[in-house]
Length: 377
Image 1: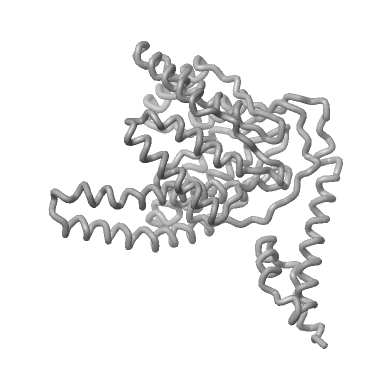
Image 2: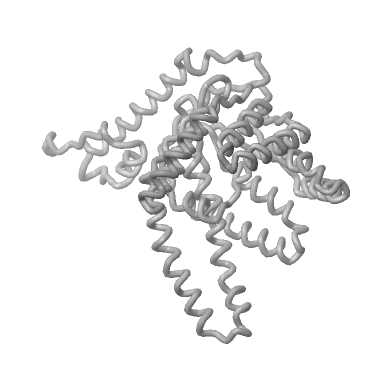
């Protein structure tokens, strides 16, 4: 008989640790621990169901409502103070504070963004990003040293060949940053206490790496003509693997439609000497938004090119005339402008949502930051 005192108290475990523990425990050798772990997982699932059933959470929504609004509540002064704080600590720590600085900014943006009156939350930590940064250094530092040594050893006429051979490595890094970084942020984003998620396993990671490699190579070989198709393929792959508490996102954009939209935008931007660029920028964003759905609902962005043109002119003047001091207020203004025109249309049914354990590596997120990868949202 197993000693009752040997039974582990799983109540202090995180959701991620519980799932991992259940897989590792030998059910035959440690039946009490296996049962205790399983019961704790079921208990938490039932608690989530109780939260969802709480009328103060989801049932307060009007089932007849078909336009669901976003909003942004950030204050420029608060953002400026946060920027100054981050700058001060980053300088005195010789840059080591940057993961915490980035986390602070994200928490500010997330907590000041709301949907249907309820604000988002960001649960990522600076420590996670710092550990991810260390892992990134372990991977990148030897690679950079090896590339430099090879470049020095081979004759100059073969330098382009060396660059071509290491291209797959850079493509892999970009692909990892895009996919893993998006999943990391999604799992640390909550709305009404429920997490977002991006499905990712080894098979899907390989599929995305191949998609990314094909997209980059064809975009280069076609002098950019394939780039709109690559953008849509990449966006479709990521969106179709994203969900909110189990409610699936989907994307039904078409590469040819997007290509023609880009051709039109570039042509009009050229003949108007760049004046059409704000409308071109917005048309691309609106297309991707309106082709993105959660369940049967689609996103809509009713902002105009004129709104962006006015914001751009005023913003540039403010930043230039204040020698950059107005930057936090200009950034904050853009978020107000964007989210005040963003909505989700359709009958929103949130009864099937369930919470998701917080997993995902911060390595991809550090890669995304290091290479300034645009996630397309």
